[in-house]
Length: 232
Ligand SMILES: [Zn+2]
Image (cartoon, rainbow, N blue to C red; front, side, top):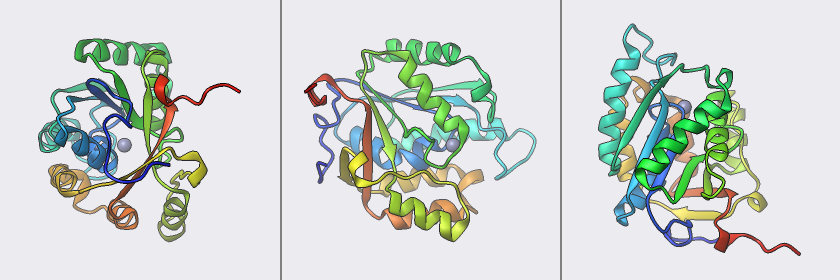
């Protein structure tokens, strides 16, 4: 596992990156530090968010989806995201949609942005949310020619969170991780603060970031050709 500062080449991108996520805030709460590391290095980074997050139990109120649409635009700007594409598939219902429909969405945005790398949540959804898992499935189904890199959390972090807070995080043991990054969370924390409805009273997020410290770990769901392990 490579450690140290994020290396654009190590991430396998020789052009724009497209972040594919389910909900407004996933790009910040989950991938925020990775995204800001890329944009700080001048990598054009776009975000495709498949829902408006209207079903969240945090900040539940009429018009929550509209409110979150505004929040995610501000957060994306904090992270240095080039373009944000926000779709309005049903929050909590991605698994009920045909995978080809979601894959088509990803394919279209990837073509429009010239993406050379897809960044997603780990399979299993990291927090265990089925929408997260489905968004990743859509990215994997969209373009077989694009590498897919997943934001993950270590197994020990997941176990601590689940024991302390009764959550359902899915972590990975070290042997399943491909990249480790030391990150600066300043931009991420500004982006997190933009998601006011979701971040003001969110002990799980606070504790996860505390346990992660300044480290992020990632795994290839589809490695770039140069990073692929040759067949024996
Ligand atoms: Zn989410």
